[in-house]
Length: 166
Image 1 (cartoon, rainbow, N blue to C red):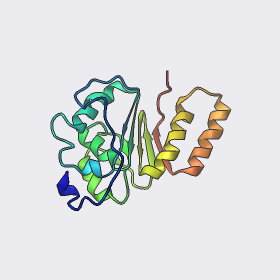
Image 2: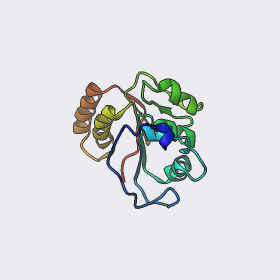
Image 3: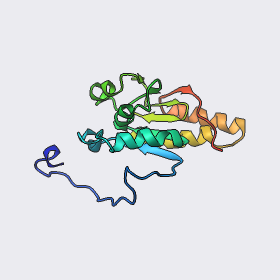
C-alpha cells in the first residue's frame, strides 16, 4: 500500500504465493507473522487474513503467532479466552484488538494448549525448539532436561500443556 510507505524507502524479497485466503488448506500448523503487513487496514476485511485464520485454526494441530501477528489472530477471535503475548513495543496498539484475550505482558512467549504466541522474531527461535520438546515423544527424563533448558533460555509462560503430536 503506497500510503503506508510514501517514499518507497524499503525493499524485501518478493514471495509468490501458491494459495490464497480463499483456499481450504490442509495444514498441521498455522504460523501468523506480524510486521508491517499486519498494520494494513485491509487485513481484517471480509475474505482477508482474519477470516482465513478464524476458518483454519479449528482444523490445525497448532497455532503459532509471531510478534504483532497475535493482533491478527486476536481480531479473528481465535485467541479469545486464551493467554497470549505480543510485541512489547506495540503492546498499546495490539492488545486492544483482542479485548477477550488474556494478555500476558512479562512473557517472551506463552503456551496455552495448542496456541503458542511469541513476543517477537527473536523469541521465535526459542519457541521453535520448545514445541518439539513438549509435543514429540521422548523419555520423560530427556523431555524434563530439554524443558528445563527451554525455561532457562526464555521467559515462558506455560498455561496449559499442549497436546502431543499424533
